[in-house]
Amino acid sequence: MKFMKLGSRPDTFYTTEAVRSVSCEVSSDLIIQVKGSRYLLHKFPLLSKCLRLQKLYAESPESTSELQLIKLHGFPGGVEAFELCAKFCYGITITLSAFNIVSIRCAAEYLQMTEDVEKGNLIYKVEVFLNSYILQGWRDSIVTLQTTKAFPSLSEEVGVTGRCIEAVASRVSAHPDKVGRAHSCYSSNGTESHRHKDKDKGWWGENLAELEIDLYWRVMEAIKSGGKVPPHLIGDALRAYASRWLPNLGKAMDAEGEGDDDGEVDSRNRLILESIVSLLPAEKGAVSCSFLLKLLKAANVLKASVSSKKELGTRAGLQLDEATVADILLPRCCENGTRHDVDTVLAMLEEFVWRGPSPPRVDVEFQEMRRSSSASHTSNLKVAKLVDRFLQEIGKDANLPMSKFISIAEAVPNFARLNHDDLYKAIDAYLKEHPELSKGERKRLWQILDCKKLSVEACMHAAQNERLPLRVVVQVLFFEQARASMAGGQLPNNMKVLLEGQPTPSKAKTSFSTLPPEDQWSASGIKSPKSSVSTLKMKLAEDHDRVAKPSKMPSKPKSIFSKLWPISTSGSPKN
Image 1: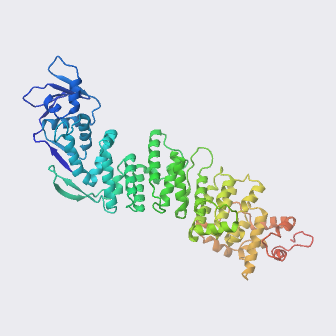
Image 2: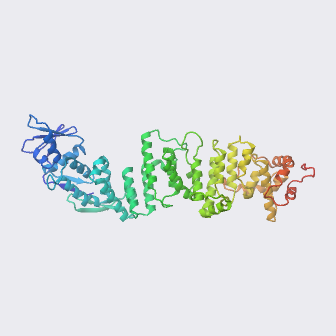
Image 3: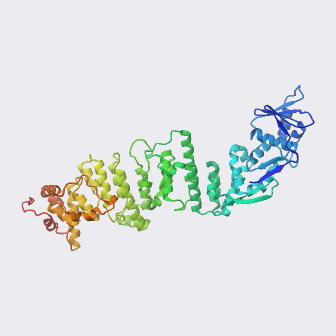
């Protein structure tokens, strides 16, 4: 930290509880009142250096007493700053540092202690120290910038705020990887005494996080406009600032979306969040998708502006392949409706898939090609898996409309889902939570599932699932039979047992029981194999004409179905 002493006389200012005076052989002839304090002083040393005091003295009515009273209303820096200015006028030594230089500079400006009044006046000497020492140091510049908050208008008027911002931004731009690692301390005569490292906060992003949002925003804008700091370092600095001022950002904040009851706190946090959003680098990957989604969760809770939420959603959508299910479980922003903000997730998904506005033509092949080229295949597979796991979570919401569930499921390109097991789990979870769905609605829901992409375990579960329409069960069995035939093999033991209506051998259960817990199939709502086959046999005859001829089945469906269930020429099932 840098210090400077002005003046040559020792401090001879004496104070009492109500009146303060300076030790001098000449009697006091002037009273200066600052707030609740009065100072017994002398006209000559003060009026010779302070143009404002000259004007006030000339305008004040003449007093019958020997002492003239001058009141200084709204004095910047209060009594502490005035005492320093008065000491300078008397030639008493004063000490300048980054902590008091702004208040002294503003006080000198208020008193009009310029060079026009007297050469070598206080404003000149403070400016010399400010430019030659304070603005040359990293920590001193930041400390000085922080102190301008006490006098925002006057600090702007005298140019202290702008120069501090420029000094900080220029040092970061010159050495973005090193600045803030160390700072210098200076003795009272202005010479460097020692240099040491700041062990607690050794990076410029953490140092700047001490600033309040209005000053921080201006500094970061200046750094960005310089174009010399890598985007990822700017992103790291924004994350450090968010951690400092929005400490609950990394937590769930509130799963139900209920914000803080303190409106003033919410308003401040909302301003901080929206300012951080406006500072995000344009480059993709400058900040992580997880950080963007944490900001988005906070934006929902704090009821941030629509533009801020849209900006976060767009940026997060471009990096959606980095997200986890917990990241995209966004809290709702209103009291009624679904538990999670599914509309924003759908918008992010569309942003990831399309990478821009949709083409004017409605050509399926063209759209699929455009989707395929919009992101790497691996990223698409990750997002498809992410969406299906997300659907499993939101499917448990009783207030989630089926239309939103289907919209999110269908937003994933067909080529991105190599396996439909997770999608099947999601649909089953939704049906379990919404038993009131009509037959038509259930049919529409199951249309998004491709039975050909189900694993053997999923097929086994589906064939015994009470919540599946008969048509879907038959399709599952049919495609499993077709898959086995094309492979030149036989149906798995589980499927054979199901079709024969016999108890499942323990050996057939082995492969399923060894699956990870999250991939195992719930037995809730599943019939026994025997009862499932009985139901199929009873309804197969009446539905045979409809079910046995789907558009994508092989050319000889009847011969295949005859292997599954022997059917008599009269159309009734054989028992």
